[in-house]
Amino acid sequence: MRAIGVFGSGAPSRVLCLGAHSDDIEIGCGATVLRLLEECPKTQFTWVVLSATPEREREARSSAASFLVGAKSADIRVERFRESHFPWEGSRIKDRLAGIAREIDPELVLTHWRGDKHQDHRTVAELTWNHFRDHLILEYEIPEWDGDLGRPNCHEHYNPLTGQACVYRGIDDYMHSWVIDLIIRGVAGVEPSAAALRVDPLPMAIEEAHLTGLRVRGRRVEVRRAGGQVRVDVDGTTHEARVGEPLGIGW
Image (tube, rainbow, N blue to C red):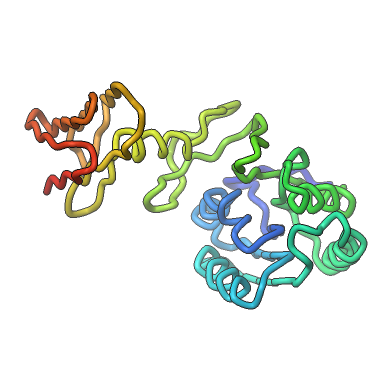
């Protein structure tokens, strides 16, 4: 096996992305794919979705094509294995992955996390390690309602509005950017755009919340909610509203 890095001069020239369902790759490692394309535009991608209805197949192909704009080549494949039944479809899925392994020799494989509680995700991860033992494999996780959040040892930070990878990237960082997004957008209600700042926090049982040190388009923004009131300071100018009444502040 040739030792390589994930990004930069040692980046892989061939990448295999595996997902059980039509949106798994985008959710689980979309930012990493975008960074690879940004830094390594000569990368060849094989993007495999293992289950999809006809409608979801159209979505999967359209989404994958959007993500892989700029790739040297993009081979998008959508299979029809029965969703939610992957452990019982395992023999057929194993044969399909074995065929892919004979066909291509990726330098990097992006697949599901082996500890995922979702049976489809977990099956794909286990079979990936069966057939790509001599390859660099990075596992991604899908945040689920069933509490299957593991502790990743490498985290890719990204801009939630543009999907572009951020400059800072942490190691052993458990505070996922999607959790921060939920706090900023849900609790504080901050929704920036090119034209204005919209503040519309969700009504929830929170006595008080205070967001400070936020910079949006070069402006200092501070949000405080207490009871049913919201106060927003933008560069020292105060705006107020009640929770449930969206507040729009033009730039």
